[in-house]
Amino acid sequence: MLQISVLSVAGVFGAVLRQIPAFALHDPNAYADQLAQLHAEYDPLTVLGLNVGPGMVDLFDRLGLFRVFSAPWFVFLLTLLVVSIVVCTLNRLPDLWRSSRNVRVVQAAPFFDLRLDHRAAYADAGGAGVDALRDVLRGSRYKVREEAGVEKDSAGESAEVRHVYGDKNQYLKLATLFTHLGLILFLAGAAVTTALGYETVVFLGEGQTAPVRAVGTPDNLLVKNIHFEAPTRPDGSFADFRTDLAVYQNGQLVARKIIRVNDPLEVNGYVFHQNTFGPAENLSIWDSSGQLVWDGPVLLEGSLAGRPQGFLTIPGSQLGLLVVLDRATDGTALLALSGITAQPLPNGGNLCFLQVVGLGATTEPGTTCGYTIGWASAGAFTGMVIKRDPGQGLIWIAYLSLITGLALTFYFPRRRVWARLDGDRLALAMAADRYVDVEHEFGRLTDELSARLRNRPESRLQPSSGSGRN
Image 1: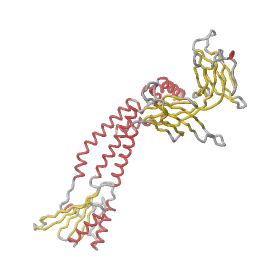
Image 2: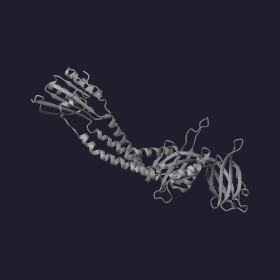
Image 3: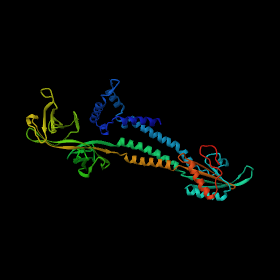
Image 4: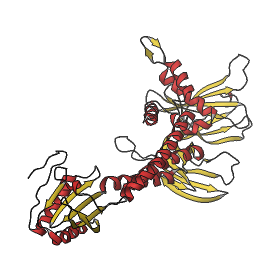
């Protein structure tokens, strides 16, 4: 319980605090970017007039609270819980097996004392009472066993006594093992996914391609955005987001599908989810000699002063191009282009040029450091989350095991009925697991038996009363 409590508290932190995406955990630059976003979000936090935000972010980062579910201490706690569940299960198994195997047909006369709960007796039942009880029990799917013997009565006289025992769902108490197995497999599936899983985010402009894993990975997949569209409704809201996606391996097309938010593409264990989108502006760039050095989209996946922003290093140069999408007062789209040099300029700065162009316009080389930059058209990029989850199969097995164990435990609990025919008097007793309404079950059995014998029992007692009612 202590382990589960600690894990639950950790889970609350993981649910309340913004978590760093899995793809950034393996990329130092992406991790630093995510940490900067966390600082921007939490740094303004103050308590009693003290600005605690920056220190809190640094402390939580060191404790792993922004990546709870992959933090080493959380993985250790999960491993410890798995070991604990296994040990508890193995410890309980012998007693559980003995209790399921325990079949005691013969019970002594005091066991049927009517002052105890769930007891009844029929006078003058005789052998017909045993036959009727056997039919009633079998009709209710009890497994019936019988034994006969000679016992001495209170006067010391020998008399024949017959015993009947009905057992229903004898071995289903072992279903708790399915529940324990489900818990173990859930944790094992999470561990497999953490250790062997893969997740990344890919932004692609129309016609662009990108590798799924690092370049050089054997049999790597290559994903291509054939076409992306986000149609709108008459009120301007988006009606859908869909990407015509193609996946290649070793130069061969292996899959192609139009993916949507809830309709991903699955290829070789990888799942491609439609996740986001944004503007992508198609630029054409010529160098000072008139040679085309870039013709394609620039993805504006970032943000600068609340406006979409992207960055491109002009091929064959050390000049970076910062692109910001803005609008004029009349709503006309404008593109702010900033040229940034790698080395400081004579004036000590790095800003080579700052120009604003409209859609379809082209800059003059003299104003953009010798380059001619044209804004050919406006478009959009698609953002996909690509996941490989090798623990998914274990999670499904765990789910089925857990549901099976719970269903068998709660809906098929064990019930046992004993009967003793001493002379013509037939005495009954019943016991069941705690999930059974024993009073209702025992009442149903005795009512059915009474109808067959055309006789009412001597007494039937209420549960937990400790005394009888005639």
